[in-house]
Image 1: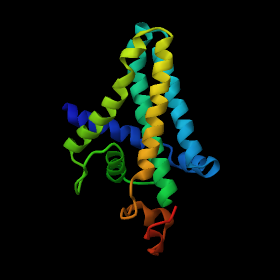
Image 2 (image 1 turned 90 degrees about the vertical axis):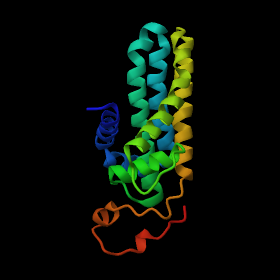
Image 3 (image 1 turned 180 degrees about the vertical axis):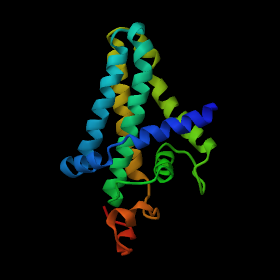
Image 4 (image 1 turned 45 degrees about the horizontal axis):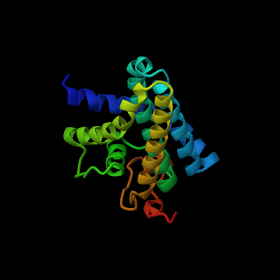
Length: 189
């Protein structure tokens, strides 16, 4: 399996592991802004942990930190999709379109491997900002935690700004078990 296929497969596995129903319930219970803040705090936790002991914990912690950041970014994206469109089950392709738009990747008619690589590069560039600072014990915890928190909050803001009014999610009809298209009209939120 080549690197590109491995990357796509990794993103897909993270996406498929999402608890869509739990995300929906959390957004319903706490609101979208609190949901984003909670995800940011979860990301900050691994950022702080990976930088707490300096280089020693950084070596082991950074891979876990990157994975957790991607998970939190995906959770935030699904939460915002639900908040804006009322849909909490979307296809991987539809989802990656929103992720790509939120990180500034130009998306064509379909999600290709090169688009996935562009999305991954944008994510990794943003996450690498705190890596060097994590090598300094204790200070690395503050740097890692604050950068991760800011990253997820910024992703939440970016996803909320994505114009989804023209996006029709295929799962909408399945999820609502209806042929009524009135729900496909843009919402005013």
